[in-house]
Image (cartoon, rainbow, N blue to C red):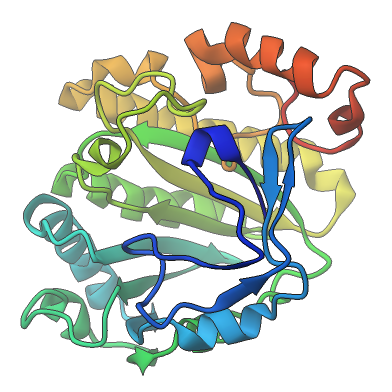
Length: 311
């Protein structure tokens, strides 16, 4: 792990341990081999560190994954997600709700997470009351949660990701999302489709008042609503791209009609947007500063060999 010493105030110590509130416990994992590079202005942390040990030492969490196939349950997922987004203010609680279609068959799922072993009573009740097809919710270590994810589920499939910036997850918008997953799923029955709502607290940016590359506009929180399409046949690449565009246009139009007009110029999250997104929509007014930074730390364009968006 590498951080800039001038940015985070690191004091190099050959036997350091993290004491950052929220990122470590009092019985922090010792870190061997902290090395400062004064020329680059960075500190390298964790030579020989076993990350399984780090995960195992973290506080237990409550959460897991649930899938839904009952149409009534998927419909109620709309209500549960909208209510959670508008009413739950606990920063330790998070929900990701997904409206899916596989070969034209609609389904839903949600992921619950609470940063601690005991969520407050009632905070997830709307979700836990849904009729489920599979359930994997428990108090567990972070390592257990990570290992419960089937990382190879989409192995061999082609994919497009894109996103829509959302300020408010209204019941009307989420109902449109549910309906879109059904209609678009039938239109592209050879594909797998995921439409993913990730509500954030409107105060999330207050934790760090400093300037950041993303989002370039910090006056309002725009949560990244995810659009994912998966398929196997390279001949369907163009069809898949058009499907993503139609879905995005439908959702943009609905949000603008609800009054979220400023989303047309909102920052777009780099990890979700489709490959041909203009870099100006990701970094906006911060792009000139990023170009100067790149010229200083990467004058030979080594990072140009990597994927992702280029500045």
